[in-house]
Amino acid sequence: MSAEAAQRAQAHFQAGEYRQTREAARAGLADAPEDVELLLLAGRAGVELDSDDATEQLRRATELAPENAETWHYLGEALATEGSMEEAGEAFRRAVELNPEDQVALSHLGHTSAATGRREEAVDLLNQAAQSMRGASTAAISLVDMYRSLGQYEEALVQAQRIAEAEPEDVVAALDVAELSLQVGRFEEAVAAFQRVRELDDTAGAEASPEVLALLEAQVEAPAAGGGAPQGADAGASAGAPTREELEATLAATLAEYRRMHADDRRMASEDLLG
Image (tube, rainbow, N blue to C red; front, side, top):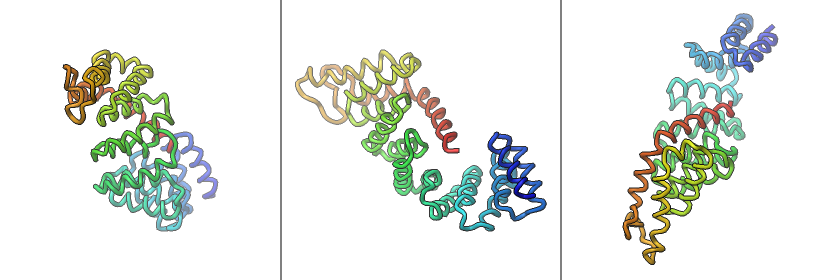
């Protein structure tokens, strides 16, 4: 009986029918209250439905099957959804200990470490996850943001370039490369990356061109005109060229909202792929 209920609940869950999933799983639990598969399905559907008992069902699954990595993974997701990041981190850590191949749990552990202030640990964990997950994974995306927040712009640029190479049609990756190249004074790379942004999305061109691109190109041309490349914050200040601070301010002002909107869309798509 419980096997049939689990089969029905699983079919509903795969179809995105979370209310029916929960009903089928709870019906099965009435006859088999310690069935771990039914508890997982009821709990996962409950998370989607914001049910009060979802976390407790998943917690019960970990009690019944403490060596099952999957139960800890899903408990961690439920706790993170509630905002209980410390406990979620503990659950994800246990999931990774039981199944080191679970790169999604590793990525989630990195996110919970970041959320609880352990930023160096978060960078290490997200690096591990990003190396094994292709393209614009949530780990890779978060790693760019993490390095940027720490002021480690060279490291952020390397990660952004990896995403751009893996996802050549990703406009946010190209924009990250443009911004971070500018941040570290690589103006020719910034020009090339920003031109790529314009190729990928006309909206970006409408938002920021021709002003930003003209400023970037002027910055590239300034050293040749001046017979030498100024260094640091004063780079490009000679011959009336814009300073790096002016470039950064202009780029940030014209593209911040554009980047945020596209980054949110990309994160959602990446999370959907993770399941």
